[in-house]
Amino acid sequence: MRKSLAGTRIREARRKSGMTQKALAGAAGISASYLNLIEHNRRAVAGKVLLAIARALKLPVAALTDAVESALLGDLFEAAAHRGESTAETDRVDEMISRFPGWAGLLAGLYRQSRDQEAAIAALSDRLTHDPFLAESLHSMLSNITAIRSTSNILKTIDDIEPDQQSRFHNIIHEESRRLSDAAQALVTYFDHASEQSGSSATPEEELDRFLQYHNYVFPELDRGGAEDITTPETMLQNPESRALAKGYLGQYTKDAAQMPLAEFWRAAQDCGFHPSVLAQKFNTDLASIFRRLSHLKRAGIDAPDMGLIVVNAAGRAVLRRPLHDFALPRHGNACPRWPLFQAFAQPGRPITALLDLPGGQQFICLAIARDISGQDFGKLPEYQASMLFISTGHMDLIKNWLPATGPAQEIGISCRICPRADCSVRAEPQILATTPEIL
Image 1: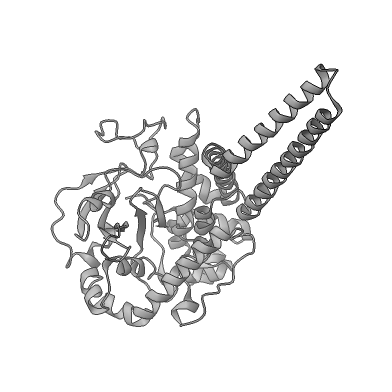
Image 2 (image 1 turned 120 degrees about the vertical axis):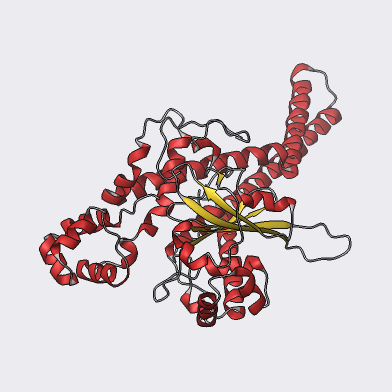
């Protein structure tokens, strides 16, 4: 299991504040020797001790926990993989994030911006190639230009044209010029509208990710029955597509909260050992809804195990991502084809349980299920989504009573581009990292 670096963050925060180990230990109510072990990542820190240290440093607990690294780790590894010639020291990325979170965030942000711009360019290229309006407009403009050029060439090369014919040719040039001007104006209006719709270079999914990370994936106001209008920085959801995705997420969260009230769900989860099937029966809902609620359970005041979640459509595109510290989820491109998430599509409605072994030695229990979200009706094609909930085997004491036999651990990766398993028979893309990052 990958070692927590919360201690490194505590040490950096203490030094930045100008406090000595003795002063911080005294303010937190622990011994200086114990704090020394924590700062060198030789002792785990959580609960009341972590809270006391955070208060002494005048920082939120989230600033010191491993959760802050999850998105950065995934982005930085993707950045290294994206640049095939990169010589980045991927084995020391943890140290960089812990010691220089600002620089790490800046690099990750630049990478995301670069990928977003590439996606925007690809989308524009597809639009230029396949958009029927653009194709028709360009064809019309070329026809107008050809007509104007042919008519003007006649007027230039033939001297003895009758006045009435000259007048007719002049009218042709005038009408074709007007049509050309109208077509050009229509194109300008079309692109102006498209620009207004796009808002920013970030993709809608990227903006939704940032929105959810900002709120740590939980919305206490919605859990209390409040409105779906969540306060968030204006720069976070800049275009209509992003706002539509966020509205859909909040709407689903509101329905889940109403059907599975937080306090009642937390008690029920504790009573049944976080058994998804038992919870689904108790709250009369489907497993995918239970997966969502379990992945959102951990928060201030609720010491639930940290569970990750990914939901994809039948094309393999992620529609919801909730990564964990040791289980990053690719933001761009395809995930590992060995994930049970994709196997679930072959058996819709059948729950799948598996023990997963990442290249770095981390192990996770995974639950996956695919379901038709279109609603059953004659003549209507099914629309499948697959959901995968995953939890570290470090929490086996909490979940061992309900897990069936999973068999031997299945060797997986995160994404083919950054997976070191050279002998994988289902690799979709060649591995382009020269070193084996610990996170994988």
